[in-house]
Image (cartoon, rainbow, N blue to C red; front, side, top):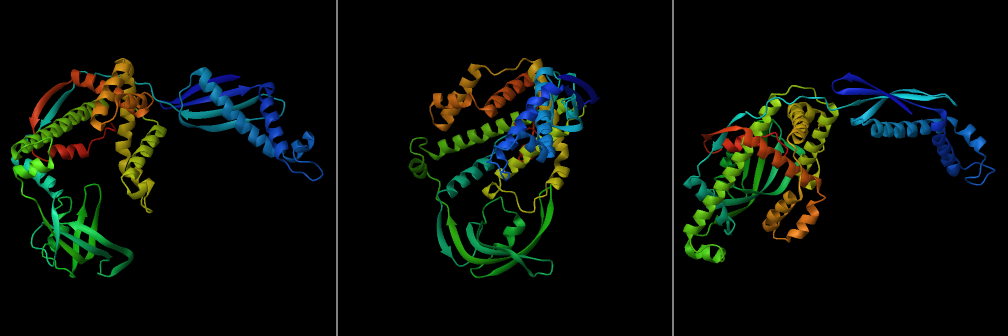
Length: 435
C-alpha cells in the first residue's frame, strides 16, 4: 500500500492511497463468500450456489460493498502507519477501480492546526472579592426555615408566605385560549425568588376560586418572549415558618449546633466558601479567555460540532425526561451559540498544547487525593471511589485540567477587586469553560 498526503488548508489534509490488485483481492473474496452464504437461489441450497453465478448476479452490489470495506480498512491502516491525525469523519473524494488493476482512492479530512504558543505567563487578571452581608445570611436562614415550615388552607393571599395551586391556560394576543396549552395543578410559591415579580404581583391578593389574567414580557437576556396566561386558583395554603430559636436549632441540628449563633456562623462560613470558589473560577475563566484571545487560528468544524454535541447533551440533562422540546431547532441553536462553541474548541486545542508544554500528567497520587476528598464528601469508602476513578476519563481529564489551571494561575498577576452582590454570579453564568 502506498500513501501520499498533502496539506490543503491549515485545518484540512488529503491522502491518496493506492493498493495492488493482490492486496485488495482478499476483501473481494470475503464479500463474495458473504453474498453466497446469504443468497437464496432457486435450484440451489442456501449458501451452495456456484461462486461464478453469485459474481454474475450480484456484481454491482459485491463491488460496492467490497470497495466500501477496502476504503475503510486501508484508511485506518494509513492512519496507524503514517500517524495521521484526522478530526471527525474523512470525506471520500475519488475512487479508481478496475478489476485486476491497482486500486486508488483519495480522502480529505480535518486536522488540528499547528500552533505556536504565545506568552501565557504574564497575564493580568482581577479577582472579584465579595463580602458576606447579614442580609445574605438571613436570606439563607429563611430558606432553611422554609424546609420546616407548616402549611394550612387559606381562602385568600395576605402576604408572600403563601403557596398557590393553579391551572394555567396560555392565551393569544386577543386573550383567547390556545388549544393544547393548558397546565393543571401547577404550584406557585409566592416567596420563591426565582419567580419573576410580574408573575407574582397579580397573585398577591388572589382568592380561592379566582381567575387572574397575567401579561408581561419575559426577558432572559439570551431570548425574549411575551407571557400571556390566565391563572385559575384552585387552592391556597398559608406557609408558616418556625421561629429561629436555640431550641429549634438543637432539635433540627442535634449533632452540629447548640445555638442560633453557631448556626449563623456556619451559614456565613458556607456562603464565604461559595464566594471564594466562584472567585477562583472567575480568575481561571479570565486567564483562559485571555490565552484564547492571544491565539488567532482556524478551528476544524468537526471539533466545533463535537462541542455542540456536548452542549446539547448538557441541555438535555436539564430537561424533563432528558428530552429536548419537540420544536428544538439545532440549526438556530448552533447559529446563536457558534461563538461560544468556537471558543470552547479553541480552548481545548490550546489546553492540549499547554498540557504537553508544561508536562502535565495525572499521577497515582493525584487520583488518590481526589478519591480521598470525594469519598469524605459522599460518605463512601476511598478504595471504592479510587477503583472507579482510575478508569473514569472525565475524572482524569478534570484532574489534568485543575493541575494545568494551578500552573497558569501561578504564572498570572492577580489583583483583588471588590464587587457588589450579584455581579460575580452574573459573570459565572456567562462562563465559557466546560470544566
